[in-house]
Amino acid sequence: MKIKSVRARVFEWKGKTVPPQGNFCSNAMDLLYSKAETMSTFRFHSWTVVEVETDDGFIGLGNVALAPKIAKAIIDEYLTPLVLGQDPWDYEYLWQRMYRATHAWGRKGVTMAAISAVDLAIWDILGKSVNKPVFKLLGGRTKEKIPCYYSKLYRTDLKAMQEEAQKFKDQGFKAFKMRFGYGPAHGQQGVTENLKSVEAVREVIGYENDLMLECYMGWNLEYAKRILPKLEKFEPRWLEEPVIADDIDGYAELNLLTSIPISGGEHEFSLYGFKQLLDKKAVSVVQYDTNRVGGITAAHKINALCEAYSVPVIPHAGQMHNYHLTMSTLASPMAEYFPIFDVEVGNELFWYIFDGEPVAKDGFLDLRDDVPGLGLTLKRDYLDQFHIVE
Image (cartoon, rainbow, N blue to C red; front, side):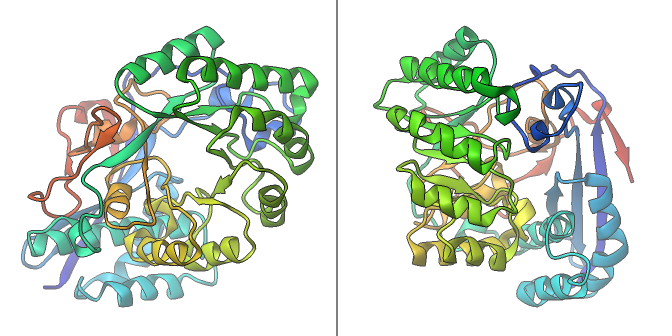
């Protein structure tokens, strides 16, 4: 079996969208002077889909959501020549080939995300070629079902947040992640608003359910140190990405400072990046995304590393490429979950591009043993709602 073609296409959504509230989540741009609310224009309404085909007819699907047009160019120009004519079962060799050939200018960010997409497609081929789901190739089922947490609790009107939390609590979810809407630029009033929102959600879900708090890199070290003591009484399961991803020492200081576990890794890449985080005790929860971190080949190694450090892995954003890793390792106790929803920020696009994504029931989701590969196919229902860049 040899790889005979690689096709990367950008799916740009042109259908109906729902505008999110401007301050639905803090972010790294909040510290800069701006007359506009930065998150009111934050969108990723396109996605790159990669199809890798072998000479005996297997087609593997991969995907990348970071800078899709740039990722496509990297795949077309640099990565495709490295894998054409190769045996997909030599996946470690192919990963190292892509990683080392682009190392001088890649290593992290969109290049590693592009490598991830090709790697995902290769693993999809491997599963299909032996008629097994990918998680069976990675170690098999370590859980009867995967517990998942509801992750779309954006910062909106407090009453609306409470109603949303109650709705999904009634559906059986026992863990919820909410977003902070304010950061250092909003002063003490923003601190007050952040505390009010946590209190409002706790009022609904109680203390018998988990609550996670998301900053999306919108704070700095000084602000985080000021607000963390005020958050401890709410007993959050973790505080996510309080500072920018490059401030690893800041993460380590906060992780040592507070009883609240600090989480991160959504914007970290490769085995080396996570070794650094773990060596510095910078995070108590690892949150890579398989379609960014280097694909399944890299993520599988990171899982083993985290298991050795006794640090749990809870991948970013849910989605099938992450669920297979979560199912196949004891290092990963649960998964993030975004429900089917109108296209808003962009996480929802996965539901519109692919068929096969499992729907959570009673706060759990499952993967089928009888569906080979990643279990995804391209959805036909919404093709006319996309502009497709070949």
